[in-house]
Length: 131
Image 1 (cartoon, one colour):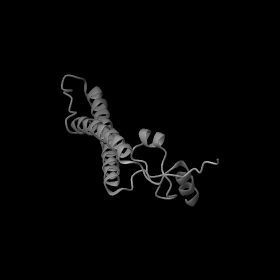
Image 2 (cartoon, rainbow, N blue to C red):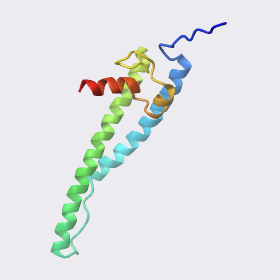
Image 3 (cartoon, one colour):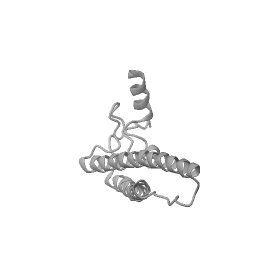
Image 4 (tube, rainbow, N blue to C red):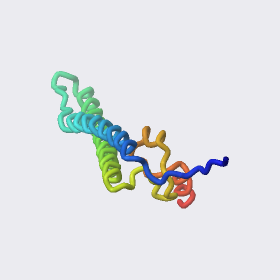
């Protein structure tokens, strides 16, 4: 007897709950990291009054560079949190896990690693060819 393989077009409520828990855990971690980065940007003033002027200048330059890097990392972390929020919204509206280009279901393994993914690997390749 031949078995017809029917492709699923959405995840079950149980599967969506699993993904929601993964997303919420990643979001909590990302928010903690964002707070640390924001604190580093806001308050990384080192006391350099007792160092020689040359070292003071170098250290201040280093602080500016460090603040810029932390600000970039903070911006990336904010984007990641926003993407996770969008993924939570897709869970709520029933479109989570569906590739926005192919319409196929994104594999569970991919979503467990990148829970905010909106494309299958095939969808990413199609998008790359369009550029």
